[in-house]
Length: 312
Length: 290
Image (cartoon, rainbow over all chains, first blue to last red; front, side):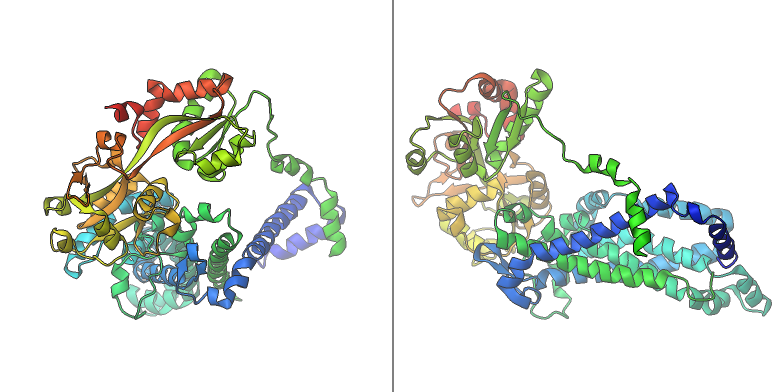
């Protein structure tokens, strides 16, 4: 960057009249359009959900009951479902993804690295409904069978959804961690080797500390995807309302059905809600909660993704 | 900064975008056949409309604003030529629209079965009484043992509220779907998903459109009356209304159907149209006549 910037500046200085080239105007225009959409979206969500906030007050968030025929709208059980499912996904995908990234970036030959990278990125591009159908076909039954000693009611559990999500975000974790590791200059690796460190020591004390920031960002961006994933979760989570557990720290709720924000939004209740302003507002309110969660996680993630000062 | 921003907008960038964003203008010709009403009836009718559009170049719009009630009111107000309804016209409807000569054309029947998994069926549960179904639905009976079955928890998969199947079930159980109490069960959507999940779960039961209970992976329970007689969910029993968890599916017209409306109705009543009715899990007219 540092070598390119002065050249670009002098170019701009020489040609002040051509500052607003078509390319530049287009870029500005479309960026403004994109930013505008985000703002309009947020405003729309807030505006459309006003009746729900009026009806429930702030109790909308910690409310445990959701039963629309009696106009009870509490989002807590769904927020819980979303958080738990995403956490399970992260706990499973982060160690495996980071491990795989270390292996592919540090331990295998260059040519093989490329092949692995292409494969992983292909995985990241598979539509989520495909994962969902695989989940219905295999994962549900596997988990149902594996959990038999614990007597789950069915194979549709928060755990099933979490594991499915883990598989889905694994490529994201891995490919972004891989990028972070490759961002560590190889001169440093060589210097460390020159000092007599083994390859493992180089990874542990040179590469990992420098790539840590990027790897945390990778995990957060994957979390953003996990929070927002709808269809795959919808198919295996069970969609059972009001599953706020008596003891939030027990593991039992994990092998019971639940509801996430996204599975609720994808359900037929959205169609029913459309004619009823309050019900609709509550549904949009759920969307707003989800939006706030994903935006926060993604913003923190992209912030960390930026290289620190002094690193290219 | 402001000057720069203004410059950006002076460039006529947004003109082409306007064309993209403009909604498609649809020609509201006089020959358009408009249909509105029940989502349940909509499934085969929308597919029939698709075929007629392709084969006869007919201009048909099918909508499901307001369900059956929306179909009746839109037909009465002259907004559509054909209404779709999954219930008989009530006297209140005829009183409200005295000038409308309603004609009900039945195109099929939607029967709902309580479908159970193999272990429940083989464990000896072949029929339930209405009070038993209510106890199960309201969560007071939690084990199949209590209704003469195996010692296994009941895994109830509830059809999403708003689904036609759920409405039939709730109407049968409570007289009015709006009176159904709050229950907490895992929910299922389409018939495919329901059958799959019931078949692969021990102790499972769900409301399922009759024709999807295949008797190989999921099994339809009979309903035991107060006299101890078991009514099986068969086409004959549905036709004779002995099996009560069902409802007729209608197309409605104002007076005898004419022109495009007649073409559509004739098509739905033809063997091809009736196959569509069957495809969506309903009983055909010929199934009812047996």
